[in-house]
Image (cartoon, rainbow, N blue to C red; front, side, top):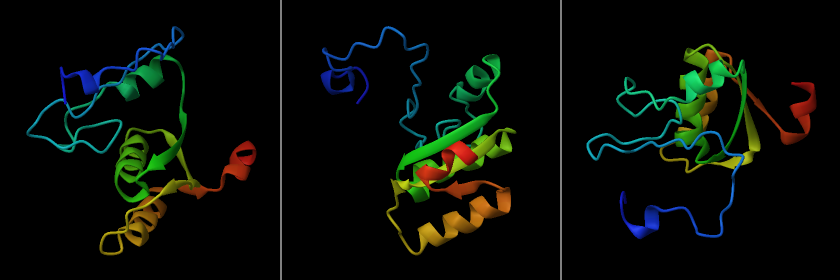
Length: 123
């Protein structure tokens, strides 16, 4: 939770080269899955602008959960015009009511490729 010791970075974490600390889920009234927008689909996190300022247009996503945070991030990134690849073997889904299958379908409709980690060099 914000402003509590558990929200702080660990004291031994030293990343002086980090150029961005992305904060999401800052509004108690809005949930947050995507790295690009809060779940209201209107409030940006600033990630898209940060990536564009650096001339980046291709995004590779991995993580937990495939059918929620990864899905929402991939959908939002694609809608914002990025080329998006989901490294599916580096993800795990929760699979609530077939949400993994629904995620694959949604990503395919948007043109988001689900690839294996070994395919990154070819993507």
